[in-house]
Image 1 (tube, rainbow, N blue to C red):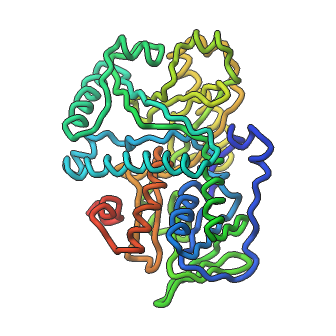
Image 2: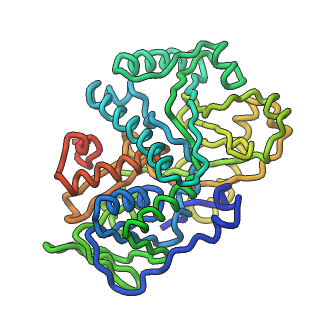
Image 3: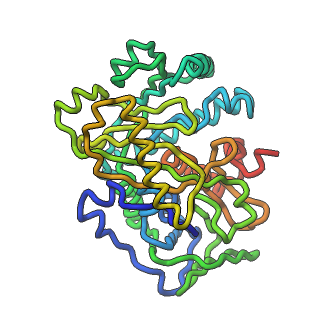
Length: 409
């Protein structure tokens, strides 16, 4: 398996406490109702939700908790899926597209509410997002996107060029401003959810790579190098299909994304930049996005490209970081004089329609999956925890069918 990220993200570097978080190895056989493979934010949300429901939960992570794709994220909690409403409506019809959007909106609100209620210290800040058009052609498509969203009952205020400039500090022909989104420290949120899960009885193990899973009529065995977990079901929350599930790999496209972060900016530098307290992203594909970190750093990201492995990967990180920097310097010329202190890269999986796969697969009895979140992993990971608990409690539902492996038939 390739590494899930390259270089050190801000979240792992900003304080010593983050680097000292430890969970034990799985050293002896254990039993559970639910075994979870994957210790990122999705696995953490699933562990917390199932433990809260009274299930015996065991989570195993092959490396270190929260230090893969989760810590590579810029952690925008977005109610908008990667694909526009108009695109999903063409694929699945307006009613199904509206339900997908509604579930994404509800998951965003529920995650914000959960982190707040549990008092997890993760720099949670509510932020509007501004989705802006890059060109006249994109302006026309974005205007139609806004009309269709409104017709389906979703909010979002249309911004003309003057209002866009006041919000983001540069020229763009139009934008959609959406309330109800947020940003967090993803590593702190992941660890916080796992600690809450452990408080409710979940057992968490890291540095315990899974080497095989075996399903039988009476349950499933999850084998690590030193011990095994016997459970009723296993939930695979690894982000993408690992080599153990090779037949599923064709459903995913692996991508690298790039993030850069400035030094803390002075008040004068922030005023000169003129970016307000919003998260921004554009209509390009692949898109670029930016947001403020709590310590007055600007995080800029995007420029996704197909996965690069081996010796080329480090060079691709330099190229990707440079492309992201050049993109935002064009928007904000004053950034040319600002030092970028951080740059890192993360690996993630996309799917043909930009939606995750959540639920069972006929090839793998007693296995459930939560994979392929694209750029919206925080929101869809939390939605996966809800849908998977519903599946285990009540069986299938129309909502689960929206994210099923069989939806492309």
